Length: 526
Ligand code: BES
Ligand code: MN
Ligand code: ZN
Image 1 (cartoon, protein in one colour):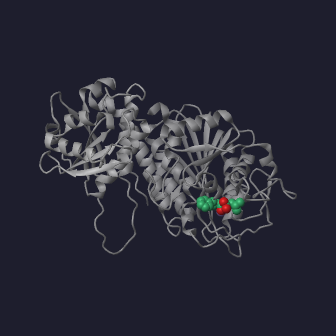
Image 2 (cartoon, rainbow, N blue to C red):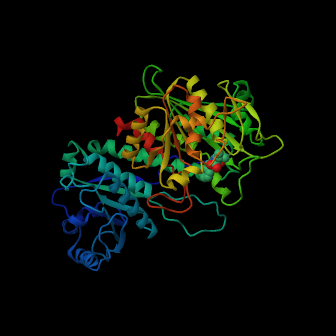
Image 3 (cartoon, rainbow, N blue to C red):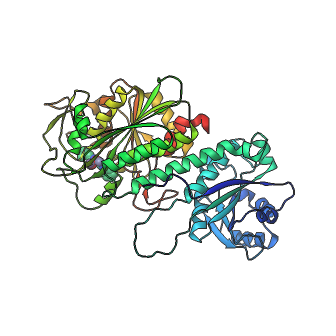
């Protein structure tokens, strides 16, 4: 249903001492040489890699102000036979002491610029050991970032068009050029051994992100709860992980009244998906990850307005992040224990649908007063959290396209976090920084809990003034079911899906939070 691997062959070529660019490039079948350049080092890099005629042309561009090596600037030049590849791709790093993020982002921009010109095979020198600012960022991190960026820049949204389309270029090959100084700085040994860890991490994170994007982009008629469950089972089995799926009858039997209520308005019945990954000898210290899997959200009886409703194919973005993450965990094999829980349903209005005013009984035994059937995500996640605890989770993170209100707070720029545990929050914020993804915490003052008090049930699913602090109250509803278990919620309502390309992120599903969670769980493997 969704691709589980990259179209790109990522490999290393060693540059022997004294080889010039032409000699190195002779040994690969590249369409383009890709140079990531910092303004301060431009001249050195041009001298090192380009024949003098090409170097002079780039210098002239610099003088004309056409290319200043700023981050986000990418230029493609013909080599006119002066190098043994058709084109030269220049991508700016912004400054010499470029951050890991800059290396990743410049890689994305380079690959995109190349693909836009039909250049499918790229050769790029690795960051140099001696570069200024090298002390600030470990070299292995920059190697990982560059490889990850180039691979992520190769992402293409699949099309369903039946009519013949012009062939879309694919990123078929990335050859990373390693010189002796770089290899020595990475700990010596052969190129293969020195580079294995950062390159495998880059590949795992790129596959995981690409997979989450593709899954998020599947139309709502193609992906329904049962197909999501089959897909989860397929991916889990690839890595030898156990996956179980509860059907509607089993959901009722388990007392999962929240998931059942949300799902019962649709002819495509709900499912509860669980996947286990055991990376240590004993099943303890279990991390629970819970992902919102609403395959389409019409709002139900509290129907959404039609404008832009098609975006709600991405309301399973949280589930997509967790299934994407399986690729990272399955490849990097961290020594941790994980239980993934995905409650999945289609939120539809019908004669069988749940209604405002209903009181439903959750798996935890608590009752919920339904004020708005469009606040469905928190209801299915409440049961998801209870189930994760029952399966042994001792710390829980949920990922959900929970609220439109997060767009009011952060636009489509940052993912909002709500937590009941400061230490867990610090860990996730640190991982997000490492991954280059933007997460910002909301406060969880007692006044916000008050706003969810119901007169007839233990809690209500929408605060009385439901637009006030909507992302916080939405998150805290989920936290109610976490109870004393350390818990953090990631609201990707603004970030899981973009109306247009923005920065390094593509239009449609972004897969955001795959890399944050991968850094959190797999840091010792990167
Ligand atoms: N899936 C939506 C949230 C959403 C909306 C994500 C727009 C991305 C873009 C969620 O189920 C929802 O409808 N939330 C309501 C909650 C409200 C009724 C309390 C919302 O945000 O309007
Ligand atoms: Mn909704
Ligand atoms: Zn929703």
